[in-house]
Length: 259
Image 1 (cartoon, one colour):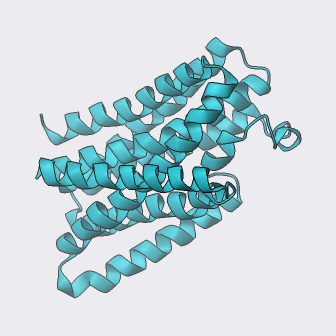
Image 2 (cartoon, one colour; image 1 turned 90 degrees about the horizontal axis):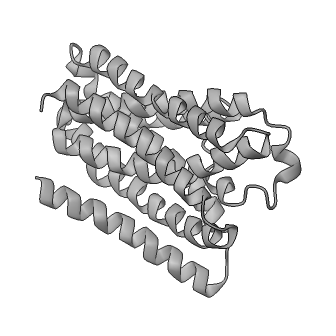
């Protein structure tokens, strides 16, 4: 499989599969959904941290070489700062942790959020994910697969939240599902842009990988982990540690088996 085909296939897979799984979860009872989603958030936290720290950053450092290590650090810092600013202006719509609590503790706030604004923000999010997946595949096919899996893991709780918000905003189930799938397919467009922008500028690849790592770290540290801390009872905390460890372990296993 050539690199461009892999980018198109895996960006489409990441977007559509996350929407399908999220749609299936919404068919479950609220009680079952509330039991499953917190574990998926913990698992996604582990996969994001491991992919960023054990896969993307090491590859970025290798690609950059010893003379450009400082540049990788600058790219990481700039990436985190960029995502902070984008999220502040509601263009970066992660809402992963809040998705678990949608329609329970944030109803009055969510009513002010337009369904179309959610779709615009989610489309931008998926587009950027596509660029990041392209950067990973251009570096190494196996790194692209691992990165796709990590992005898929953190997309599922977000897509569930998007579905719930659209339904709460008056969308029918079919309409909400259709728009979520269409929004997810912007990842394919991002993959194409990443392919054409980076394949002839390979010197930029280490910094693109650093931006990708910054994205995953920002989501895990700024969005997911604070939400996990809201549950302080011993049993919930133990399960959080267990599922975070499972996410990290799976990425380590994937990296060791794929190389």
